[in-house]
Amino acid sequence: MEKSVLVIGGTGFIGSALACHLSDLGHRVTIWKRSQSPIDSTNPEFIRALSHSDVVINLAGSPLIKRWSGRIRKQAWLSRVGVTHTLVESIKKCPKNKRPTQLINGSAIGYFNRVLHPVTNIHDAPGDGFLADICVAWEAAANKAVALGLNVSIIRIGVVLGKNGGILKQLLPIFKMGMGGHVGSGLQGFAWIHLTDLCRLVSQEMQSTTSRVIHAHVPVTCDYRQFCQTLATALKRRSWLHVPEYAVRIALGEAADILVGSPYFRLNPAPGFKFEHPELGESLDGLMR
Image (cartoon, rainbow, N blue to C red):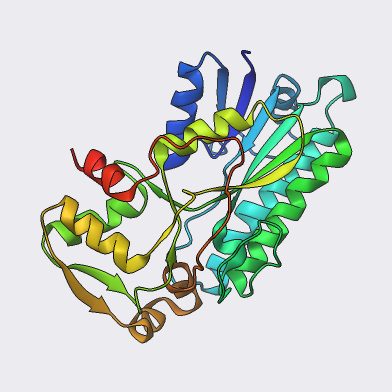
């Protein structure tokens, strides 16, 4: 069924691909550009856009792979928790009979940052550190929309593999030069998803009639060393360099958790969803073409 969809954070690597995918499926997609009009509960233009939407997809969030200074931490928090809080407050100002029926809100597998054992249940206790704290607060802000009558889907997104963006955009120049390798022990978890599958997962979640939390990563995840070796093979190169964890922490501080603090997952990430790209080798081979 055709729906009117408002996408916040729709100009980035994930959001732009998702907007195209939803448009191809026949949905009416509006990308809210904060540079043109603010996300503000006092902004009548934003309230009007919400009132004309069936589904709101919130993917807002500033980049995190950089050293977390006080300014960067504040920006990361406000762009996720702050924007989501303002979004829910804005929905509250819509007439009750014109509110969206569903909020699909991004989160991250960083919810389980520094968890030392395999995660076997989506509802397990969160990890610790800034990355986990921001995910917990982010999800709590989104879930307040339930009280307004919306179905809320939280999608904890893993590492997204796609052309022209994400981790591959950063790693490909290094690996193509034959200088690729793993970070830390290489045994940390690497929960990934193909960009095409992520877009399909979100569009399928638009049919959900209940509030829930799902994960956006393949059912069988790998470790970081396996990912690097598979990427090198796809490029017909070697993965041989090793960046010690202490060096990453000197460069990035606590932000190094993004690279070395991810756990393994042993769970059904998204019940009812069938992945088209569950195999890492096949996915990387296709993306290298």
